Length: 196
Length: 196
DNA sequence: TTGTCTAGACGCAACGTCGCGTCTAGACAA
DNA sequence: TTGTCTAGACGCGACGTTGCGTCTAGACAA
Image (tube, rainbow over all chains, first blue to last red; front, side):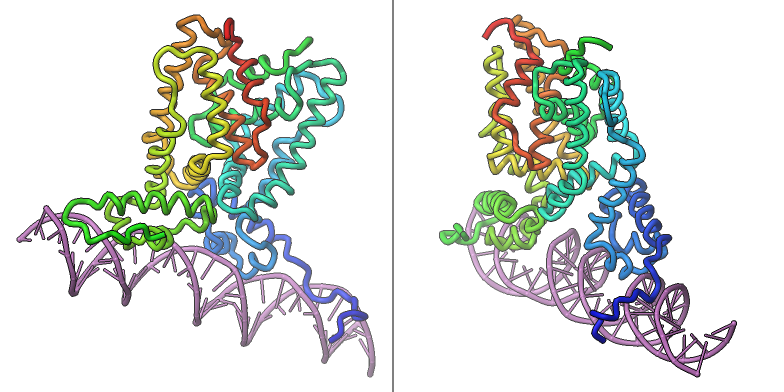
C-alpha cells in the first residue's frame, strides 16, 4: 500500500513500440490528410493503440506533434555547432527553407505555429521545448561567425534570424512557396559577408 | 451587450443590426477569450442572435472573422494609394507592425493565418478575399515609389514586402513582440532610399 | 405571401475520463 | 528453479460533454 518504502519498480515498462507508433501515426496523418484529420481517435486507430495509451503519456495531441517535431528536426535540421562560417550560415538557412516547405516535419512545425496561435498552453510548451532552445543555438551560430570576423551584420543576431526565417515561414504559412533565390538574397543583404 | 434592445423584429430584408452584432461579437470574443472561445454558439449568444441567422449568411465562423478583418483593416490599415514616397512606405509598415501586435483586428489576422494552416477552404478564401487584394495594393505602392525614383531596392517588390512583413508576422505569431526599431532597420536595409 | 428573425431540438463527431479484463515482468518465498 | 504475488501498461468500449451544422416551428414586417 504505502509505496514510500516499497520503492520497487515492478510491472511492465513503457512500450517503446507503442510510443513510436503514435509519433509516426500523428506525423503521417498530418501530412496525408491535414491537421483536421489529426484526431486522437484517428492517431490511436492508425497506431494500433488504445486511446487511453495516448492520454497516459501525452496531455494532448499537440504534445505528440511537438515530440515528433523535436525528434525530426534534431535529425534533419541540426544547427551547426562550433565555429560557423558565412557559408555554414547560408547553408543552414537554405536547409531551413527546404525543411519548412518540403519536409514532412516542416508541416508539423507550421501546424504547431498555427496551433500555438489558438491555444496559450500550446504556445507555452512550443516555446519552451522547441523555439527557445533552437533560437539559442541559432544565436550562437551567428555570434560565433561575427566573433570570428566572418560577417558584420547591421542588425542584432536575433533580428538577423527573424529577418531571414520570418519571410520564409510567412510565405510557407500563406502557401505561396519560397522562391529559389529569396534566402540567398536575404542572407546577402543582411549578413554582408566579408569573405566566402 | 445585447445592443438590440430597441430591436423590433426586422422584416423580410436582411437585418443590418444583426449583421454588425455578429461581426462585433466575433471580434470581441476572439480578443477577450481567444480563438478557442470563438464558437458559433458563443457568437450567437453574445450577438443576441439565433444560430441559424449566422448560418444563413456565413458558411462558417471563419468567414465571419474574415468579414470583420476586411472591414477593420480597410478602416484602420489602409494601403497608401497613388504616388508613394519612401516615407509613406516606412509609415505603412510601421502601422502594419502596430496593427499586427496591438490592434484587436491584428489578432483576427493572426488567427486567420493560423486557421488557414489547418483548413484548405479557409486558406483559399483568406487568400482570395484578403491576402491577394492587399498584396496587390502593396505591390503598387512599392512600384510607384520605385518608378518615381524614391527607392531602389535590391529585391523585387514582392520580396521586399515579404522581407518586411514576414519578420513582423513571425514575431507576432510566436508571441515575442516586435522590437521598436525592427521595422525601421528592415526598411533601411531593404529599401535603400535615395531621399527621405 | 414571402423572407427573415428567434428559439431550440436533432444527429453527428471528437473530446477526455472511466472501469474492466488481460498481459508483462520484476520480487520473493519455498 | 519454480511458482506466486503485485504494479503497471495495455486494449476495449462506454460514458457525459461540447460544438458542429441542419432542421422545424412560430412571430413578424414588408
